[in-house]
Image (cartoon, rainbow, N blue to C red):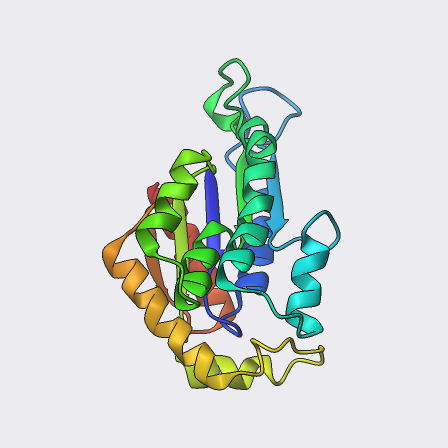
Length: 216
């Protein structure tokens, strides 16, 4: 299983990805193979520490101007480069394994983020989806969108003791991304989007995501 945690800046994607990761590691059905547990992996995008992630970081934190097309290519390059790794961790390139040992992958943001942010920048939605299909970017089993009131998200984000990038400082853009994400949940492009009430408490949100995972 491959799931993505998605949402506007301040929605709590990183927190929920880590909470779900720990919950899935610690609350698993006992393996059919004694001594083994279902492998669980956690990824965060963009990855600023490698390849084009460093350029993305410069764009966000040092105000390096990039066109919508340049942004799109930089962000999607990581997903294209990671598709083989994701396939391997999903077990798609290996012989079938017992159900209890099939891995779970969790991504804190993914191509679904690009479908929101870069289409707001001017990239055509159909072109973006076609690009993902043509380059065979791995499609998750579910994209969990944390539906948070933008004003609550802004308050959360600016309560963090972290350096903010220019997107996180742009309150108007954060509100626009909230509207764009809701459109994505409604239209369901590229993958299966599941709306999660992100205004609730952290543990309740985790429980709701976990219950949806069990349904899948």
